[in-house]
Length: 115
Image (tube, rainbow, N blue to C red; front, side, top):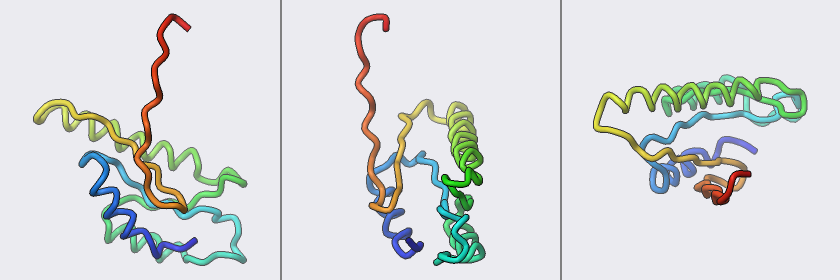
């Protein structure tokens, strides 16, 4: 997978997600150096132009996976704190971007009862 569709996906995110959606560009499978299709510098440059963080990960090798989640959570918390001082609360929005493109996450149904 390359970053060819990122701008299209971001257009879809802008259309379907909250204006407070937190984005991060992730280059996956960084452990497969022989099969690399996108150089780190290209990913970093694209992220700079989009004004979002960039991180390379490998789920298989456990490289930067936790850091990617931590970065997203940090950005969500920061946005929440900044918005509390402004016009009030906003509904959180989660957008999952994978090789199929962005999809709006559906909230889990809450069960009644204690357990």
